[in-house]
Image (cartoon, rainbow, N blue to C red; front, side):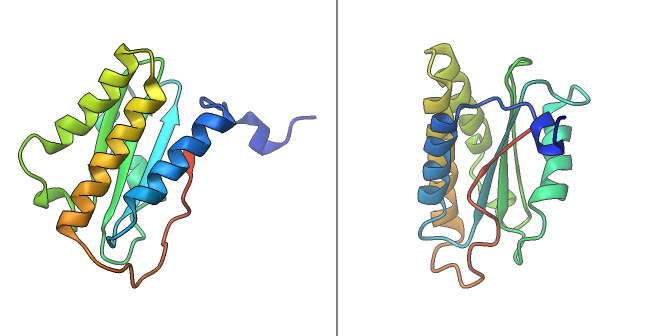
Amino acid sequence: MQWPWQRVKRVLTPQEEARLVEAIRRAEQGNRGEVLVHVERRCVGGNALARAMALFEKLVRQTAADTGVILYVAVEDRKVAVYAGRGVHGAAMPGFWESVVEAVAEGSKRGEPVSGLEVAVERIGGLLRTVIPGEDVAGNELPDRVSQG
């Protein structure tokens, strides 16, 4: 018998996931933002940004000031997208979101995809500290985790 949660296809090992969770925790320090990394094998629908937007609505939108960011990766399709709430998106300098995606691509090219994801999450954290610095008075609104599907 297979339980419902056993149907989720894990993409990352527990050790890789732990590294990313730690990167998320560091990225959320000193700001009021929330970061979620979602990794899956194939990009449902084929459009990474559309998939990131849909997952954002489902998993991240509930943050009080709409200060969440999702980093989406479809491993087998080699697709990456970043989507941020209104409290963050427009505050980024031109080219910033592309630099986040490029960090993931560079890590994959080096054969170190998790390192690339860590760099991408660190960049997001740096932006959050610049755009919405301070103590997170709303608390940790999203669990520090990597969503896999």
